[in-house]
Length: 395
Image (tube, rainbow, N blue to C red):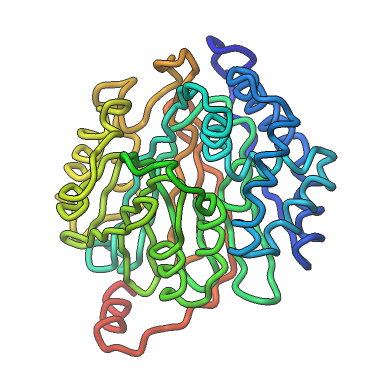
């Protein structure tokens, strides 16, 4: 994708990056192995920085503003990002930008007291099917990531081997610490864009780092705590599940969190607020940029719920491949958006945490094939009769 109007003729390569060791060493390994993809991502967002007339010197100043917040959340993330920069041979500030791209641009507008540069929404459609709804009796957690089509060429799957917690596997933009993924304890996460009037009033923890914190947890309680209580710069919808059969959708304002639970064992969420409590307390602002969210959410629900009790991975994939109202569809091919950037479903990610299996399709509207990635699991098995009965039936 060399220009806004060009379309790829083959599916983008999706490399597996495996790292281990202490944070800085882990970062160096990541940077060295993923350097071409990291540099593509930096080049892409550098063009966006130029649009906002933000110099590298100003970017470094903004990164310095973020560092105390990141260090208070987890100082090892700063070490790891330094390691990524060293391994890839790029500026540290550029790696922080990859982990906080939207927050950086918004903070730049605020610091310079200028009119905000329009930022394309990072849209997604996510779905969780719990054991009572699936044919296998296993959790299925999946998502379409809708963003700039160019990012298909700067994405990787990162596998992290840890000595201080569960290993994890994450699909992410190269250089970022995490995005969608699962860990060896059976915890999985995806996230969706939301917007409200409280966004960017205060400086919070970058969303990529919150997702990473979730994947580091051995216990679901602490994974959900990281989502629920961490102050954010902007709204976000975060879907967390556990292979043992729990899934909760968290609609997060910067300073408050609202829960949505499964209906018939299924949770579906696109890019608009759904919690009645949330809608009674804040203003929905995402629909003006992504009105298709209203029916994307409903289309996936219509395609999945009739199969409740017999939902399979293929059921979920078929729903996420839905092309109703294409190119403003659940699965959308590259198309110009309001900013004249090519927007697309960059990737479809489908996970079965109990199996340790992640499947990823890059630009699925054009190339509906999947690469499979695996993680060795160490899941604590529940002792309840209900959970055992479900597995016995599934077996």
